[in-house]
Amino acid sequence: MYLEKIGDGGASAGHGLIHAVLAFLEDQRLDPTPLNYSFAYRVVSEPAGALALEVARRTDGGIRLTGGEVEQLGNAIDGAADVAAGRPNAPPVTPTAPATPEPDIAAAEALVTETLRQVAGFATMVSEIRSETQDFGRDLAASADALQRSTPIASTDAAVAELARITAAMRARVEIAEARLEQATREASDLREQLAAAHDDARRDPLTDLPNRRAFEEAVEAAQHGPVHIAMCDVDHFKAINDQHGHPVGDRVLRAIGTTLARECPGHLVARYGGEEFAVLITGIGTGAARALLEKARIAVGKRRYRLRESDTLVNGITLSAGLVTMTPGERLLSAIERVDALLYEAKRHGRNQSVGENG
Image 1 (cartoon, one colour):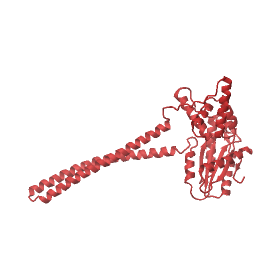
Image 2 (tube, one colour):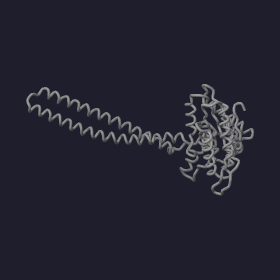
Image 3 (spheres, helix red, strand yellow):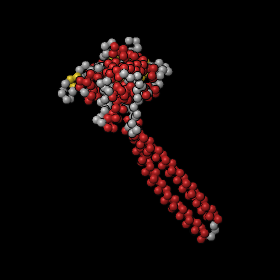
Image 4 (spheres, rainbow, N blue to C red):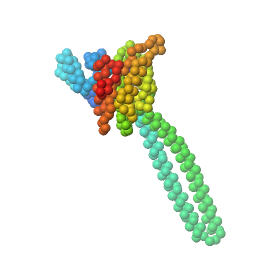
């Protein structure tokens, strides 16, 4: 599943491999340390290798690897290969990341550069307008003094003419400044829209159009009132769906599940947490009501029928396993996620297609 983005040759294949490595790390919830990155790189770059096959066996059914297993598996496979080749153990080589920035990073950098340019432009414009206003004030004050000192009519006429000249010049400057300010305001408005869209994109899953993991975590951190419940839902045997029907069908299934969960949990946040896993943030209701809401949503997913548009064949038996916890006062999100993951795995170990709460 991690190699679906890899293209044929060149930079495209290199970027696809990097995406696959990062997807593996995210799905397994492994920090991107050199050790973990090297491990993931070997798994996705050698899908038929001993390490990848053992990882597939251990993670079948949605079980994640632990940090200890990563180290143990890496050393075990390395040792076996070294013994077979008759050479001493050698540490794995961490691949060098590509120097070319990823498209998302490049787009973000472009927005930052444009923002800085706008800010600098506004600062320069304000400084110039302030300077011109000060010049106009000095000229106006000098003309007023001249009017006060002058008594002859000729002198008065000259002072009035000078005042009119200064005023006309200042008016022309103001019109130019207004035109520049209007143009800058339009550019700033466009930039705000781009920044808002970028902010939303960074917190939205492109496949399901649901909030993503970052948005979910931010929402949990911001939740302050009433009970806060976290549910984690995982599609049962999703790898088999991809293997049997292909990734495009698997993607459509994920979109349908996301739509169903969002519809069945109105007023609560449903997010795609990663891979075939969905998270639900339930707030403002008691534990019993939260459990009933989750169970209702899970059953609705299981009752839905998925038809292949290519062959009009029904795909049956798509179900969810889920866990639910209630956060304790002051509890960190990481702790709650660890607890809900344990309940999710318990649901899988007991036959899948069920939800498990903290009281069973």
